[in-house]
Image 1 (cartoon, rainbow, N blue to C red):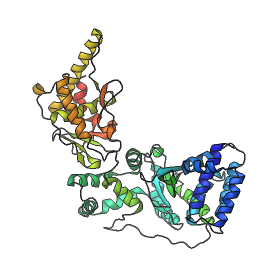
Image 2 (cartoon, one colour):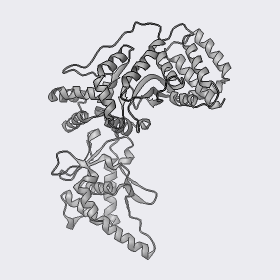
Image 3 (tube, rainbow, N blue to C red):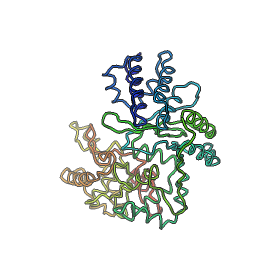
Image 4 (tube, rainbow, N blue to C red):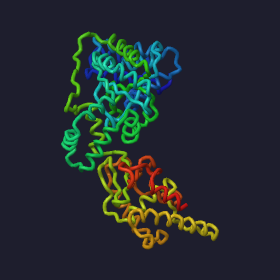
Length: 466
């Protein structure tokens, strides 16, 4: 058996013992037997505390050792009842092990461990997620929502289907909803409250997964997820960092059958048929502010560590970051036009390093003239005069503009990876803004809502000056 497999076994057993927050004599005696059986040393125990539950379970499930998965699962089940009782929290971990390691269950299951600072919901929450809207699965959920919700609820799981929450928000009086949002985030501007309100009502399962979980919160494991249930099964520490552990179970139009199979097996492990079931649900003019509901609102209202969009409004001469409710301050038209130019240029940026050879210098001068024409076109959109546009080819003019722009953007500390939003110098000497084009939008006179940069009038004018 490989060392990493022994370390992984130690990690999973450790989480299983700690699941009910009680460590007793029977569990310690069984733990000694496990260490002997799998040759787990004290050094391996220490090493196990520095890998995630998800990585450990994946390692065990992919092992080529004969009968390891079967023996390991049997040992986990025996460990759980060593004190004569299987708690709900222990059953949550066991169900993950069973669905991952027992060949009888032909479901596509993946364990995921996420830093709790990034995303943390209540234990036994079953959240429906998908990267792109799947018609058949969503139709099945809408048709069988009550059955799915009640099946999970009777086993003390809470089913979260985002469209139901958004439907409730849409049915709420807009003025009341605005007052609630303003109460929860009193420092947010009226413009920020409006943006939050409109963004919430437009939220879908796909945009929630891609824009919020992946882009804003950095949970890249879910970037390409198919329709699935993301189920919270526990918490643990990896080193000094708190993690939340989940399993992702793929579902389709037969989601009710999958849920029933999951719940039937889960309830078999519990010692009691009597559960305390949480029956609270959101009602008219009432909002929950706990668990996932709080997490969802906090993503919009707590402006920290966020991957924000960028709104360029040349007619108001504004650069607005709606997801953190902040505007770039202390800038003049020349800096705003330069930032818009760099966003249009993308990752290629602009290089002002003068070459030495005459042939290369001629190409460099032609390229600078093109940049200057593009800058003039955007500068004019911001209300400037083409005849008085600053000449970026002159270092004494260019450097103060760049310095002012970078100094202003440096103050936007609520952003996730704020350096991506600022002007940086590439290895080849080019100045660029390393932000994804799909996060940049431009306000136009003929549209109430900002349009994507690549479809905007600004980008069209920039492209015409090639």
